[in-house]
Length: 202
Image (tube, rainbow, N blue to C red; front, top):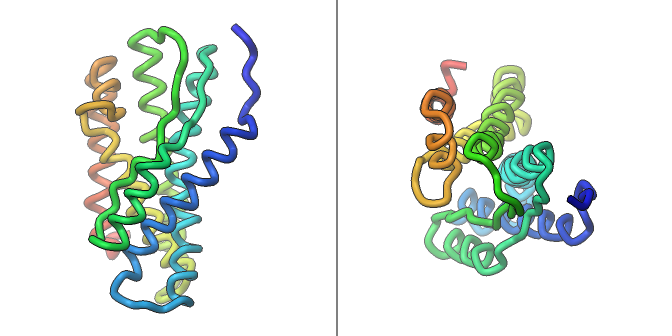
């Protein structure tokens, strides 16, 4: 099989576009009740660091795990869904975040497919940890605490949503490979979602 470069220019472009578009969509959720350019820029910055990074690293976890097994993998943005995500967020206040997908070329085994799929949600769960640290050490009312709170909540939700065992979501493929691993990951993910609603416990 031809050796694949880590991230070609075309894929970098798709990643950056998806990163920025999803961050804009979430920014509309945060500020849609107040038309304030400074507030918009503040939450765009927060979204780029929290939501955008969470989604990009989720997809890169799929990609590099697939590459570890020797498969060609590449993220491709879905321009239509990115426009829909921004429009829904701005007009309705709902984010349907489907920025694209990591395409894997080759016949993966059930185990490989399960591990590749699990890598994304596990990455978001691990990303929750530094954001929890920011909440814990950031102090009351600071930008650090805001970033930590949003980052923890959003990455927990990304992990939990993707572990739902339906359709093309990661959870279905993880469950098909190993039910025990599926139960552990989905329990941790939804546990973090619940904890994100009660930051006073941190």
